[in-house]
Image (cartoon, rainbow, N blue to C red; front, side, top):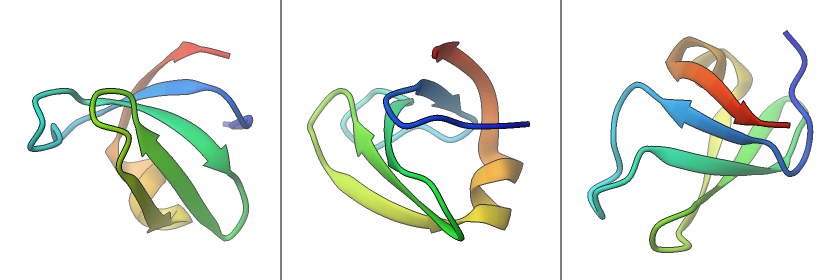
Length: 59
């Protein structure tokens, strides 16, 4: 599956702020994600990210 910068994805596990929707801001060996609720930025390795994606909401 291909992921694009600016896409909104839903992850299986929610963020402590109460949302589980994230915006992709970097794609590569690692993914950089921004929480749509509080704005926190996290980085995940590709393997962990692909396992935790539930669905893509916007492309």
